[in-house]
Image (cartoon, rainbow, N blue to C red; front, side):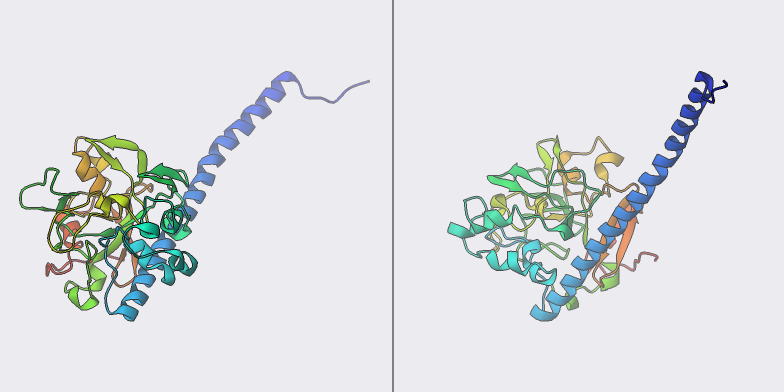
Length: 309
């Protein structure tokens, strides 16, 4: 009796064909997934942009980048991104339960995952232990401090003619105790960057600088003063600078670590998403002309620049 069955050669051919099909299909699937993650990331920035619009409307000013207690802008807009419960749990005071490093409500809040503050493409764990905060949650987005900054504080080298985040007279939107109003943004809301992606990577360090970015609060910023005096450090946990190019770590591996830390960037290839003052979200390529990019970072440089839709 004749038996119908695959020969060994036929079986190998079928296996080979299946392997080829899988090899062709996987990149397409990964591409679709990344497209979905990019869209989600863009939507997160859109929500942050709308939160700023509503915050400014309610308070007639935008939130500070950070204050003397180490509270960050990301904490202040929580009520406008459906984060009321976390916001109401915070203590806005120095010491005690208002400390970001001591056991208490503020430290607990720093371990709360807020999906709006995380790009789905970021590869970092949901929780990490950092700066006396257990289970601290890394952030994907930082606010724009301007185009003059090349250092976190005056204890590190600042490029001549530039400033550090320790100073209180920066030309961006968010910095120490800032109270920027929409009318202060003389370059126009549609031509000024508010918040952008950052390539958060707690496993990478160069020149003593870690690429760590966080939200809600920072123990190391807590010594910040808003009277012009010096104090605190690691302000780059919450804000970035547009002085260095986008994705500087990858575009120029020889650059100093402090500039890499300040640089905006993303887990998406070719650039990073930003939300502008008018609430629009744009993908800015890392090949953008550096002078044009820096012009987008100042609020009152009177440059005539724009990002094409």
